[in-house]
Amino acid sequence: MTNTFIEGLVENDINKLLAAPKSDLHNHSTKGCRLEWLAERIGVEFPKPPQHLGGLDGMQDYFRSRIKPYCDGFDGALIRWEGAFAEARRNNIKRFTMNFGIAEVDMLGGIEAFEKTIEGFHMQYCPDTVFEAELTYPSCCDATLEADRLSQYASSGYFKAIDICAGENVQPFEAFLPLYRRAEDFHLTKKMHVGETGSASDVKRAVEVLGLSEVHHGIGASTSLEVMRFLADNKIQVNVCPSSNVMLGFAKDYASHPIRILVENGVKVTINTDDLLIFNSSVENEYLLLYQAGALSAQQLDDIRLAGLG
Image (cartoon, rainbow, N blue to C red; front, side):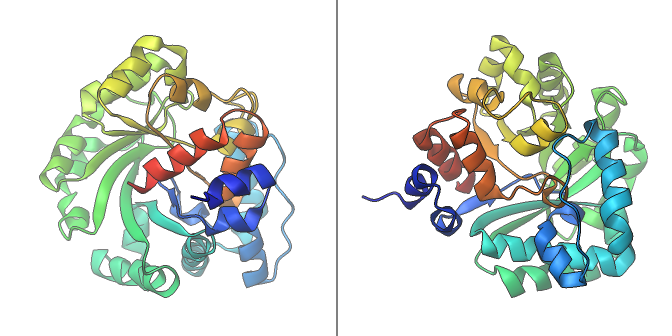
């Protein structure tokens, strides 16, 4: 049987890659659309991002100075959310996860209005896509306070997962226990940004302390056979974002990206965009970059694609 996706990789055929069903399971919603789409929509010509952004602070500086001034505020967020769903349709994303902060829910007037808005974009652009909204909190948050008011965001059932982002080792993992335990009451999938800048032991401890079933980034685990075995044995999924890692300086290049080590050691991984608006590399291009760099074979990449759909 012909495999269109593998053909697309081997032949460098973008149309074949776009046609294949894919997932994007790590996508920051307000940075989830293509730069080209946004430029056309608002009539602004943006420069392409530099190849190296100088870490998380450099990334935020670039976004705040070169992109956000042209699409800020309520209307700007709506446009960027719409663009994320437009990209899901263009790229045949059949399983799509985006994270949202509580401030974004509040901006729309609460969970009912938020759900109506986001589902409007979902139904308009990709109604056949399984969409999973993820509730994310900054690593500096007061987890006890947020646990006390989680029900106003999670009780409707619209959010399917919880996440902590915006810097590692800001607080001990134990500080987030009240929030993650409360999340269990709403059957939220427990995730966390860990192992992007942190160590393999950080990844393992986060999983153990908070009961995570997925890790965003997690490439630090590649430095420890013990931790990779732990992740594989416990079926912990690692949602990898190659261009993000390379452009922020957390991976040297695509050829030596840690995803290869994770895959070779049996860790379940997915391939995702992280902040498409900043890194300017959509899902099909992430696969292609890894293939062309020789990081993984076409078959390995296809296996990852299929696993992300499951």
